[in-house]
Amino acid sequence: MSFSYTEMDNLIIERWPDVMGLIDAHRGTQGRIEEMIEVVGERLTRWAQPLGFELETFARDCEFQASRPAWADRRKGSKVQLALGGFCPFGYRKNDSKHPYLWVYIDDLANFKVKEPERAAFARNLRAALGEDARSWEAEGVDDADEPLGRYLTDVSDADRAKVIASPDALFEFATSRYPVVFKLADTIEAELLKLTK
Image (tube, rainbow, N blue to C red):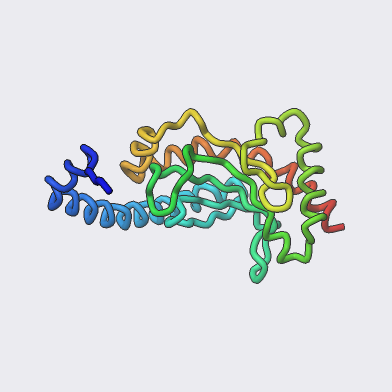
């Protein structure tokens, strides 16, 4: 049995202390990125309220979730969440998204005793109500029972994402420029939720 290192293996072995230093620095930086996302989440909460939305921050997942107060119950959560996520570079925590995304989650409808077939019907009705606009929300990974609408922001590269998280102002500007796209769906979502709960 023969064995040989690759050129990259040899480079890592030669520079082992430097590589270990970078790994430690990477871990520390991720913690500070998480703190920065929390700070921006507080700003976004204040920005979203006059627009009629409440916002939750999931810093470890690099995701914000917004919903209208009328969609929520204190104990059961919100029936629908409008998410902006994947804005951190690939490899932050468990982020494996190739691009940032805008997504609509309805899986918490289960907390309101809406079974999977009813959620799937809600998703179909929502797409029908959106008409032609629904086509731009058919990203890979959408699922009628849990995540019926999604859009990847393919114009944002990994290098762009590094710039987005370079400062709180950059992330805030990114979020406030991209979130309104999914907020435009809220009236249609609310109308379909009213039909569902009747």
